[in-house]
Length: 151
Image (cartoon, rainbow, N blue to C red; front, side, top):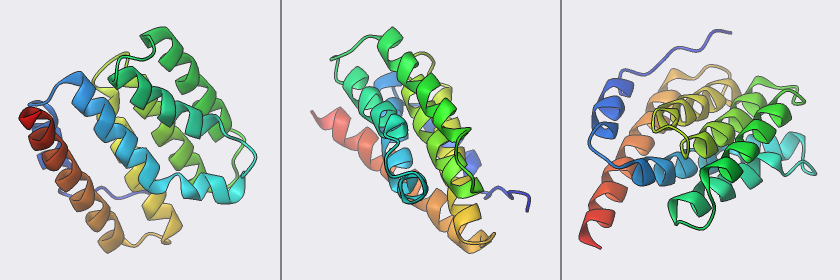
């Protein structure tokens, strides 16, 4: 089954251009956390994707350096290669891309796309579910951008 993208991705891309790398990383964390259960259900003892999500959050808060975040990103992608279902693979890759956002802001959109793919595969290709996921992602990005600006 081939992933079909939601039209909402364009709005997400445009909004991402207006936020800082740290906001993008925190948003990528939210995207990955929203679907990580699909990996956890299949591989409950493998915590590499969760460690990547935690590292992305820690980097955005200034608690770890880029190199440490990148190591967890590579580990999450290695975990993805051990998963069987497409939903679990995409969820682990979302976590890896979230951590990689510490290295380059452009990884944030990939975290969201892998999260959308995870939903697509978990719902047997339900395009409405993908669109809802993308709408949720956009709303989270807008809320995070507003919240951070007010601090």
